[in-house]
Length: 190
Image (cartoon, rainbow, N blue to C red):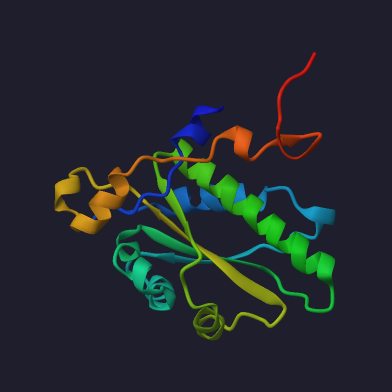
């Protein structure tokens, strides 16, 4: 596995004093813009807030309880939207795939720059839709928090520090990759 993928994790212990430059944010947005897209439709759109600006404040106001405690320390919050074509199932479904690919590429780009990326579903999409006049044919799906980790975890909220100390784990490959039929682990056969 590539080291950038291996190093990626969704931290919460951001340094509330660290800032991100517009050049850094632009590079991360470019990574999302260049993500693969179904049929060249390019449905992904971004609403970008840097800590301290009005957009950032509006984005933090959409966050649910669990994210309100740590996400305001991020250097930037990016609301990622895609198509919401109720009359076009393919556009609706593949738009979500495109959004996932964009968020993944943005996350890897962030890691390459020493920035942590934390995608969040815990926000109120209807509040975001109203706050930013998001058109009806677009769907707010993810807020991507971007920040630099705090140098001293002892200065963090104890709950945040505890969650960041927990090991990053994933299910073993044998439980999620199958061959021949569902549930039969993928194995290399000669």
